[in-house]
Length: 224
Length: 144
Image 1 (cartoon, rainbow over the protein chains, first blue to last red):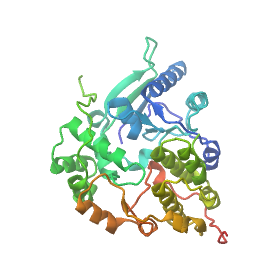
Image 2 (image 1 turned 45 degrees about the vertical axis):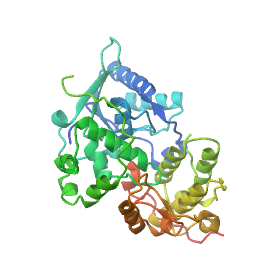
Image 3 (image 1 turned 90 degrees about the vertical axis):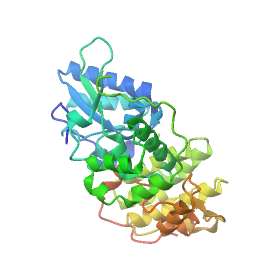
Image 4 (image 1 turned 120 degrees about the vertical axis):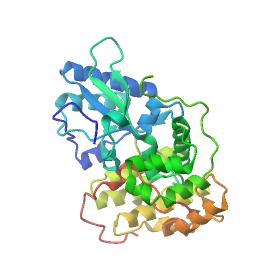
């Protein structure tokens, strides 16, 4: 798997019970997320480190799209363990300052990622942090989101189904994917076994409601 | 603050917090609980009736489904009250396509279907859903 953390000695020290005892969360928006990345970047630079992360799910869409505005946490690809003290400290400090969940910055999504995804080809550099003229300590990438959304295809989930549907429609528009076959081809690139048995995806794409996508979505493209 | 119990999640929804995000955050709390007892505790207290029939039925389905899916050894008995069953079917899709409704009728887990909720075959999936069950124990007695 491609990216992920350039820093070494990354570890999550909280146990499940610790996390359960300290959970608290507030949906956060793009500005607060970027400010948090600024703070992590400054902490990394101060520690003489350069941290590279790929963000997934809602947080990636909040960063890179104009059709998703909030998320509940930041899913990043697997972090090297154990976490260095500086990273653990800054993540905890940000959580406390913002009233966010103790696990707002987590790598639980790693289980779902494609082993075929390549860092250079399949991840776009979103930006470096902090966003001022000080030395950057954090590089953030956004990945192959449509394939991940298609693999999960949670469009009829009772909780977030319609958000998932809109995410898929918007990502298809962004990528110029116009047919079901083209969508399955995107899925096949990263998850060939899922694409080989994609009857569910084909059915849901054919029958889900198709309106509601944002106009003129923006997405960072390589070289732009 | 992420809700630690289903009852707390419903309280928050009734006070104006967004339903989908609040329930999704509760699912995360449930999944991160350290053992079966803690997971059961998070669904044990009966949520108050909200006056929103779909929400009331949904939280009953969530409690029963999570209890069975994660083999907690007991199901909160009040989750099966008739007040948590819809009079009319609810298909959890914005599509009016008959094929979609037929699919959901077939796919919906029993815990949802008998409450007249028709949803996908594996509802409530979250990024953490794959995490191994931490605890080994289950609830030893059926609660009253």
